[in-house]
Image 1 (spheres, rainbow, N blue to C red):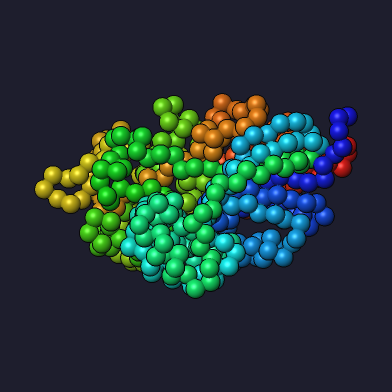
Image 2: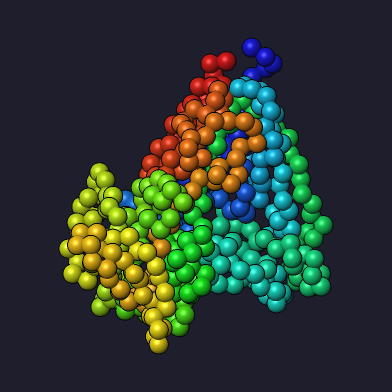
Length: 420
């Protein structure tokens, strides 16, 4: 049976599935270590404007979870942290965590004096690089922990001392070093989520070449009140509202050269974003180019509602190429109508690529040998004895289902410890 069984649980990933797993396990009485590589919890959900099925902003649900974590002494949160190694077996895993410095300590009150004191700017990762922020920054308005971060480039710059001196609370520590943390845990829940597929790999679509070609995750930030345009849907090239918006489904998905699988949520996400455009720009014309529309279960009604809008055109066909129209600032989409086999050239002011969900394990596998499926997802809830998968690292799915998945993983982890 090995050594003594540790009664603690490690949760890797602080998105919705990871937070849910951590909260459920802690509220059942177990010590939980929650590790997140970003400087804040909330994952991709924190970057959404609205999410299914309620079509409401994510902050209400996130705030409840943040409060439950803050009020529970059994949860220890490590942000800016990654798991470096895992050794041992069920009941007695030895884990090494590397925590990068934030350069801001617990004394921070979010007064913003540090940001005022610097001129250095960086691309805003929370907004997918669509705008700039100061190199001393709060990750987003509802960040948890609610504490500023100093970019390492600023720490190395001549402005560093000025920024430190600007803080009236002595909250800036420029001498912070990376910390190695060693833990012994009984079970591990891997909930590191997904990454948007890299649209730069879709060389016929012009992402990164034409500013008015964006991705679905960028569109979500653009439509959000705390996004790069304060919620205004515009053409990045000129700041004007688009008159025609094209949503390109399966951008890199269901394609043997990219992501061979369907991510399941992209069709609904584009239809949701079509409603953003219609509400904000009532006379806008919208095209949704698709292979098949996948709106399963209770979402069929939402699909039918969007389809009834006369300004939304569902076009069955795979877009082959996107180019700048000669002598115009519009984009042209070349596409074959698979119903009639006719070739079309359709002009649009803004193109949104519905890129799929790639599991984080495709680029950052677990630091211990485990099995993956053909697409680099963890193949089931039980990865191996004592290690469990939750959320979109296990399968592409929506927010409501990753919450259920987090609960299921917490129960499995608790059973793993209890039965030994």
